[in-house]
Length: 238
Ligand SMILES: NC(=O)c1ccc[n+]([C@@H]2O[C@H](COP(=O)([O-])OP(=O)(O)OC[C@H]3O[C@@H](n4cnc5c(N)ncnc54)[C@H](O)[C@@H]3O)[C@@H](O)[C@H]2O)c1
Image (cartoon, rainbow, N blue to C red; front, top):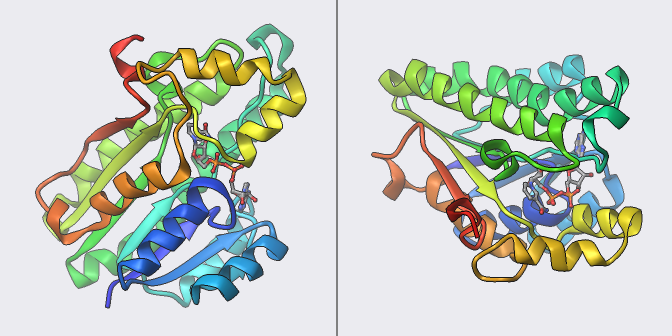
């Protein structure tokens, strides 16, 4: 049975991915900052939960030292809604840390084991902001674009070990992250987000999880270094 690790798995896209991979019969572990939601999802799904801050690089290394995973879904992320000129170094550091450095830490910890066993799947949850840019999310977009270069590099380095590395780029998806944006800037943002897509709606977390699960599957074994928009056609320039 393939062992999967989902980061930021207690809510939103991560939680939908946990449910999906458990449903496919994988042995799923997920980590999250939120131990209340994490314990509840573990109870519901039978997945294993560990409370962990993905930005604590020492704690991540310590956690992964005793573990073996065949599949990593690096999903932790957070955004901010402010024009770039309204942000400062503390924001830049936080956004790069939560969106980019967490992926470094988890990939660094799981890759040696995958290499030794000659099989692995890594899925990086990026964003359409990473290739289209985002008004009010410049540093977030930079971090998400960074994931694309990082993933393609890992794909090049690890193909020889039977490890694939791909990125999923969600468009706007109804999750607690979007609820926070509504609380911050008002409900109008939901219409603005829907208008960015050809399908004129927000996505559901399950729709992103389906794409993630495909990249994790045996069927996706000939796909690596790719970036798939799951964004209602946002990438076409709606
Ligand atoms: N929702 C969207 O519209 C959207 C669009 C594009 C990309 N994404 C990306 O998808 C991913 C998931 O987004 P979401 O909307 O489900 O987010 P969310 O905020 O709804 O859920 C994220 C989960 O990650 C956890 N988390 C955050 N920081 C953490 C940390 N340092 N350590 C451990 N856990 C942490 C949170 O507790 C939460 O459970 C993110 O990388 C996000 O950038 C989301």
